[in-house]
Image 1 (tube, rainbow, N blue to C red):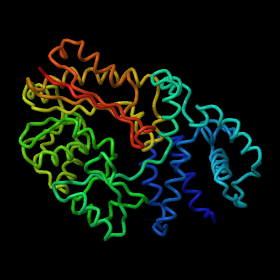
Image 2 (image 1 turned 180 degrees about the horizontal axis):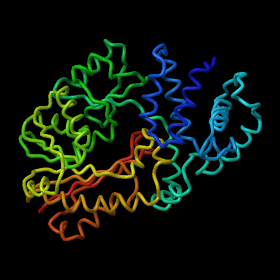
Image 3 (image 1 turned 60 degrees about the vertical axis):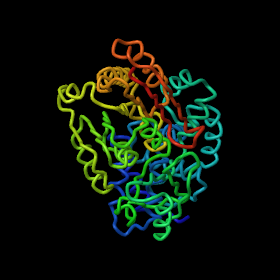
Image 4 (image 1 turned 180 degrees about the vertical axis):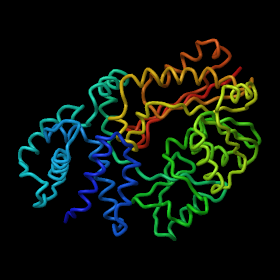
Length: 403
């Protein structure tokens, strides 16, 4: 493959922002792709995929290149040269690229690949934490699966179309899709494409949502006409799914502490034709207290470490700090104990995270059930999902009933 200098320089610029200035990889990639309007889809794909791969394997490439953070520009070029050699790409004769000992790079790679924390490029503390929590065998499989590029998965918006009609509409726009067994509304793209520019997207026929994420709203067992509270709604991916499952009948109160995310939800709801969603910003504890004992269903899609969605957000590996786990488990506990009071007697609640750690999942549920606030609840069922077993994101969900 012929390497273009401006594309490689764009990757180096992006990596500098991600590694040295602590910016989020997805935002940086969006920014970098706007550098040059003349770049075609192949150029843009090369920039995005190379950047993500280098973020994924930062530890491995830095170790082989013998560089340490904070990375200088020559350091980043050395890491990129390691990536290129391992991909079998002929290195260009540019002054930024030092003479690169290809045999030594391959030898070092073979040696480091025998050690999981280098091979899968995880910080020591995450590797140790997950191996202890999940067991060596499961974590070895899971750490490899979390390094795979996430597929593009769509959720059919059944308020506007059917899965079959969505597939046909996308095919007319030259996008091939496949059904996924066991996922009622999901379609997979065998080949990546920018689905956001399609007519089908503008008409609100689908949302982009991981297949396992699509199981969360269904787990809540909603029915048309119910009063449902999505307590940590964010930009509303699951609220929109709930609206479809409820056929636009009943009420969904979508709450979040971030008003900006709820604005995005409003925009998405309009496109989806979801009319039964009412966004409410949590700007005081009164907002929660007003709802006590009033909802048939409550969804708590809790803030978490995000260890289950590293395929999508590989920079989580490097942004996450050991003390965050302690803070977030405390926060999850507070949210569960407070928001569970919204469920009316006979109602149900789902507690879900996109983490694979028992500390954030089944341990939280057990701790809640043993608390004063949880004494009226019982666990009906729970589900643990791993990337290594399903091929999709890691998730946890528990369905609790208020007696």
